[in-house]
Structure formats: C-alpha cells, structure tokens
Image (cartoon, rainbow, N blue to C red; front, side, top):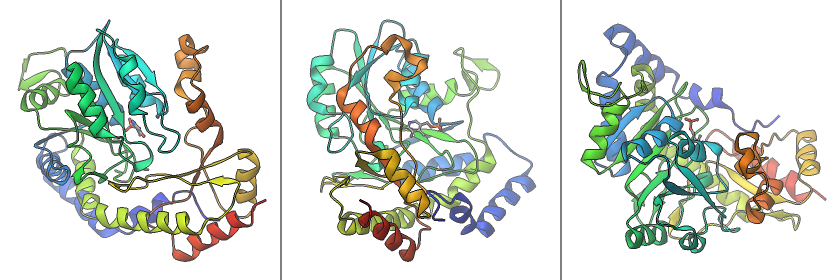
Length: 362
Ligand SMILES: *Cc1c(COP(=O)(O)O)cnc(C)c1O
C-alpha cells in the first residue's frame, strides 16, 4: 500500500537529531518561552526573510492573533478565499469580523484577484491571502488593491512553507503571515505548533504580549490576552526539521514534475503552475469527474488518496447562515478534487507506480 502521507517515515529520518533535541530540553529543565523557542523564531524569520517571528500554539491561533492585534472586530469585514481550509475563515469569525468569501481561479485554485475589488466596502479591513496546496496567491494584484483601499494583507501560509513568489518567500509577502506546524504540513512538528512572521515591530510586540496573557512584562498585563505558546520541545524539533525543509521541498517538486509530465489520462485534470512561483507542493491535487470511482480504483490498486476538501466552508454546519450562498467554482472544485500521494519519502518506484495506475484508469 502506498500511503498518502507516511509521517512515521518522514520523521524517522531525523530520529537521532530529534532525540537529541528532546533530550536537550529535558536536561535544561526549561519547557516554555526559552532558548529553543527563541532560536527557532530567529531561524524561521531569517528563513522567510521577515524581521520578526512569534511562536504560538497552532495555525488557527496565529491567524486569530494577527486579526486581534490589528484590532479588527464586530462590524469589520475581511476578504478571504471561499476555497480554503475552514481555519482561515474561523480565525475571522472568532474575532467577530465578517468573512467575505471570494471565488477562486479555476486554474490555480487560489483566490481570483479580479473578483476582490467588487467585494470591498467601507467596512473592509483586510484581505487574507491563502497559499493553497503550496502555491502562492497572486500577491502583486492583492497588495496593489490593499494599497488602493488602505487594507491590511494577511498571508495564510499553513500550506506553503518555503514557497517563493517573484524571488521572495512566503511569510514576507504581506503585512503579516500565519503559520501552522501541524504534523502533516511541509514543516511539521510532532504535535501542534504555529507562528506569525511580520516586519511590523508594533504588531510583533502586540502579538507577543497577546499570546502570553496580554503580558509584555512578567505580571504586567496590557491586554486581555490568551495562552498560546510554542513549547520548547516542539521548537527544538522544528529547528531540526527547518534545516531540512528546502531539501524536502525539492523532493516534493521533483515528484510533482514527474506527475505533471507523465500522468496522461483525459479523465484527469492536472494542476497548473505559474512560472514566477516556486510551488512547494504541500498537496498534489487533480480533478476528476467521477471522484468516488477513481478513489476506489486507486485504493483497490494499493494507492491511498485523500480529498482536500470534500465540503466547502459555506456548506458546513458551522456556517448555516451561508447555506443558500452559491459559489459555483468553489463547489465544483470541492466536488472533483483528489489529492495524490506526495511527500519527501516517496520512492521513485512508488511514484512511477502511481502514474502507471492513473494512466490505466478508464
Ligand atoms: C492547517 C491549516 C490551518 C490551521 O492550522 P492548525 O495548526 O491546524 O490550526 C490554517 N489554514 C490552512 C490553509 C491550513 O491548511
């Protein structure tokens, strides 16, 4: 069986270094807000080409805290792609803001920048740009609109660690960026983790305090903050994995190139890539009409696939108020997408086999 994602195999490659990292924390007797967190934040900010990084508990908190730190709340609107993982939208709702959904481009699956302007109202405060599946959104157009209307741009890079856009990395393409280190992401911890990167010192200081009980100084609380921290063990592990991220992304890219050149089946729509973008292939997503049949066929032939995602956020029970909303491009994508196995530990033989199976599908 070719697994969709073999997390054990992914982390097994770093067993000794991870053991060393955990032991270092155990021996130090210091488990939160210490040297490991500081080192990781510094390394990760440098990696992204950003000035500042705050480690937090998860990706949802990262996005949530950015919005809160900007002071956006009830009555404010934030533009967000309709075609995203629900966390992007939940972060907006949790602050009392109104998420304004925008349809994706059917080619890239990312937000269609040409549809954003008509959604801007006097209440709009920000645009959230999600780099879905590992490919950056069209940041030039999004940033230009934001400038014109004086809006903030927030990146959701939970699926795009290390991706480039016109020579700059995700995490430094807008005003602030939310990150997730959920185990299955391109940069994954052995548990939950998240971060914010930004070049804005004021925002950085505020998020740092908000994430630690609103405290900028021990026992002095400026805000009604939350407890959302990246613990020392996860930070130490992430430092090990960050050093290997580019190599892992290069392998993902190699597999993606192989898939794109060798999968030849009229029933399958392959993903399209823009040249100026360095895609990091968090997911390799194809579209197919009779999805269930295709998934079963591959499973019967020993290839595990997943669907990202089967039901769009506006059709979820959590957003009953949007039940009647019609977003045909988003709905079509959710009906047809299938994610093929892609990860740095797939072998050439496995990749070849997946291609053969797909090409034989009728
Ligand atoms: C994974 C993910 C998140 C949330 O990250 P968590 O760490 O699981 O909270 C947010 N946005 C996108 C696009 C994601 O894929």
